[in-house]
Amino acid sequence: MAILSSLRASRPTLSFEFFPPKNNLGSEELLETVNELGKLDPAFVSVTYGAGGTTRERTREVVQRIIQDTNVPTIPHLTCVGHTKSEISEILSQYSADQVGTILALRGDPPRDQPNYDREGDDFKFAGDLVAFVKENSNEFEVGVAGFPEGHPETQNRLTEMDYFKSKIDQGADYICTQLFFDNHDFFDYRERCNLVGVDLPIVAGIMPITTISSMKRMADLAAGSRFPAKLLKRLSVADGDAAAIRQAGIDHAIEQCQELIEQNVSGLHLYTLNKSSATREIANALTF
Image 1 (cartoon, helix red, strand yellow):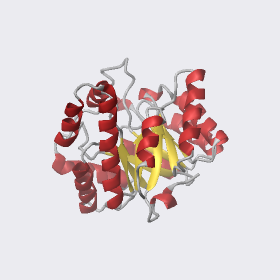
Image 2 (cartoon, rainbow, N blue to C red):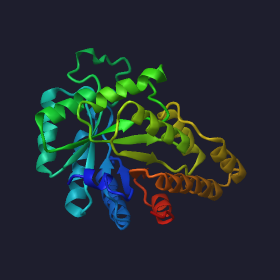
Image 3 (cartoon, rainbow, N blue to C red):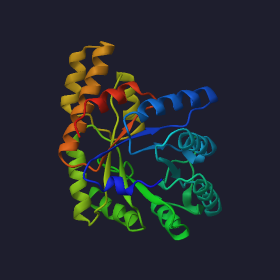
Image 4 (cartoon, helix red, strand yellow):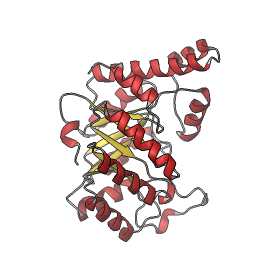
């Protein structure tokens, strides 16, 4: 199940991201969500991978279930930090057997219980190493990589950031899926910077609606450097603590983001669902492609 042809089509794609639940009940609830959102005809869905490979088996189980129970192309995230080449080869063989045609190659974070983790002895130090390994050892997979419209959190110099990014692309990446952002100016600037360094790949925009103030604070903690534009903050302020009004303000902002991106010829929209269908469905149903 490959997706590159869809991303290169004239019509922007719609896709969704899920994470592997911690138990069987959560898995069944997730399948219900996937089936519900499947009615929106997504080009693909993706499934995340825990820090240090901590959800390796659960990620694969979810990918298998979605492929078996739906007709939606499913992309597993694959992080390389802490993995050996042998382990990555085994994972790729498993996904090949599962009829997975695309992966999202990421460096990933070390296990949370190892704050002083040293990557020096790892087989893979950067996401580009993983991209190169996949392309050198298999011709079965399309490979996506992450993009950072607001800048990579570990990059001190924005002038050299895109040079490092270009080196990752040159290892054989096929498309880019961005981290979440809330101001489309950041995305448009990022797309131009990609063009300036000769990166001409489909760029899928990552969008996450704010539905509660606590979720916004979590996003700020998890995605260091996340920028919340004044227009969004004003909307949330007008809601004045009313939960329903805050949720609607966040959804309205996401809808406006997505519609403008569509009008500016984005390759695709990738909605971070947090394994829930309601807000995602509201956003998708409001869009005109």
